[in-house]
Amino acid sequence: MAQPRQLDAVAVRSGRADDIAAVMAIDATVTGLAKPGYWNALFDADGALAGDSRIFIVAEDGAGRVIGFIIGEVRAWEFGSPPCGWVFAISVDPASRLAGVGSGLLAAITDRFRDAGVERVRTMISRGNHQLMSFFRGHGMMAGPYIQLESELD
Amino acid sequence: MKLQKASRLALYAVLELAGRPAGYLTAAGMAETYGISINHLGKVMRTLVRAGMVESVRGAKGGFQFSGDARRTTLMDVIELFETVGGPEGSAREPGEHTAAGRALGEVLDEIDQIAQATLRSITIATMLKLIGRRSASAAARTPGERALP
Image (cartoon, rainbow over the protein chains, first blue to last red):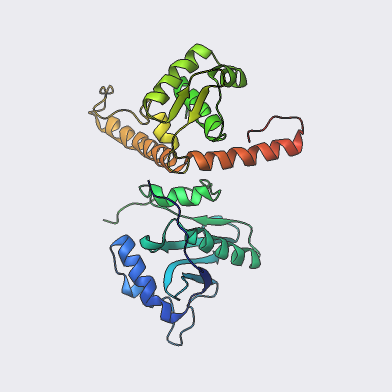
């Protein structure tokens, strides 16, 4: 049974363009997919975060190594929803889990959402990802009033 | 969604016990709290003990104690000791399921089952205790005399 662990001096800060390589590596480790096009588009050619309200936060260990990240955005009136904060992605290096890194990242982005004036945070999780779903539920999130529908395009 | 009675009693028992990790509770005490038959609860407790989720201690100050990991044990872990959510695989065939209407209805019902299973598999006992705490705090704010779980 995995036990909680203590990591020295974990800090969270706004992500930078030069964090992308580390973020991509964590994502590829966790998901098995590299997605360079997606991650490289996160920042524009000038190194600024693309998108008006996108939020990108990383966690780094005492040695300054990026060990986790969270990305989200405030979105308004899509799907008829008043402005709320969306968490698009969160991931922690498996070697650094069970040390509160994910919780710290989620707390950091929800602080930013509050600063932006929204009162609700949402995310979407694959039905089979019980671990990630359990993480968000452990932070008080419950199923919302929307149902995601989809179909294949013939 | 409606749980079978045994599943519900088991969840009550596990939540009561996990909410008091250092103490023991008797079946009689839990039965009184929830207004349930001690015989029914006794059978449920024996199943929980056999599953290793709860341990029993004999003696004057004995009772039951939660012996699982509240952060890892999910609601489904408890429920599936007593019933299968969504119907067992290979269960009895439903009338008309071989028809187009039967297959379409089956797809819809499977969708509901999968959502139910994902929900129950993703809520740990620790998360439920937090939820209970929040509900108790809200209720206490409205009715100060109402009992709250620790």
